[in-house]
Image 1 (cartoon, each protein chain N blue to C red):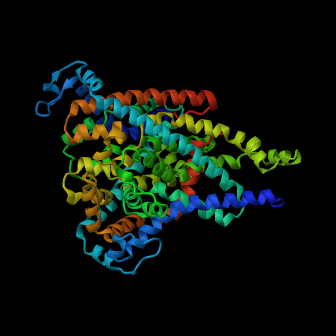
Image 2 (image 1 turned 90 degrees about the horizontal axis):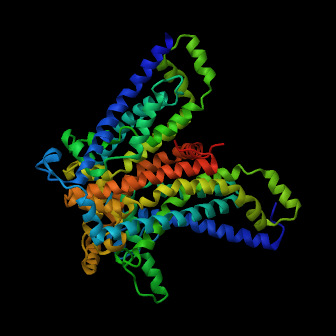
Length: 292
Length: 296
């Protein structure tokens, strides 16, 4: 509809060039990482790798296979995602459903709502929370990574809004048939809000998989670190050296290709679910933010 | 009769999460009294001595605190401004093309970095901007001396803004793309009939149509001026750039947990929480007033 004038064509070219620049800026660093992981270490250390591997080899992946700590951390992360998802989803649904009722239908609604909002707005902060976890003897256990964030309030609000959008008549029909609230929730509300459930589930999975900080605070044995904390530690030692010369030296001897392989493998699970995620998180964000 | 059964069911449903919230949200709130104590771990909260507002006075005296508050706000404001503009520009550019496959592909790629953690991306960023990395290699073609981007107080902040915007602009553009599709096509037709060219349509139809969303998102971003991005800075910084990169959250972590100055850490954290609430509540009010939207 535009392509008639020369001016419009020039504009088209500029638009395409800019969009390509944006896209490549997101793509190239990740492709480069993969290329490094498949290159030989000498070439990688000399910064000769761009988007194709130099002297392609699987050696860093072979080395990675025998890194028991990496796989241990990997399994801890998997365990955390599974347990965390279970706890978060159950609590999210059970919190969001009653809160989605009007205060006429559920007399305590306002009080609970205020408590939840208050918990969202105000917190004791890092240090007092740490002390509570310590008092409960949860330090160094996987539950320290899951229980403090058991009720993700942001997602509860998202789910609550989805429950509110369900037509009232569905519930009334079920009530006439004598269904209890538990049954109404399980049989009517949950199936209807499936897209929102998928969205919050995906946010939860990504959140647990990506979190490195919880373990840094609550886990003292390096052995028990989940994957992201393990990865994070790779760069920490380099970070705390302030002498630029030493920094460069360290960068040279550090095993660049092996680190790249570790990062690629730890990103892989996310990349595998990403295509399925996209349609859900896009609709989830739109539902959550644009209201008519 | 039946209604009573419903009430009981609702209370039962809420019970587990209330227990968790009490343990992990409300009980820690009492820990805030540490801000008014000279807290000594061996003595505990009940045994430590009360010092009134001494911690707050001390906090205001140390030069560090002015620096970290300034850093936090400067970094966060730059991120919000640049991030919003880049997201909007990207959405507008993408909206101009009609090749569906290309559109889909570009969206998929630019959303991706948002889902990777800073623990991972920090390594990528440090690689690219390292002393012997690709960016410095390109600079050297133009005869520019290599720069230690991640260890220079001049460069670190711009790097933070750049990499944060890079990570988030795709994801941030989703909401703008959604509201672009909601603009009435009749407006464009009318503009065409009036002889508007492409740029004029952008200026007089698209941008005004986008305005409510821009306003809303910016308002909801307001509380983030105290949130300059712990994950990112924590993973990228080093003692050389504390001066320009240390923010409230990283400071509380270092002073409170690493150096074990619990009282000072709590004091700084408390101030942050209080200002944070004021900002969130004002943003909620403002959003309600301007766009009829409420967060809660």
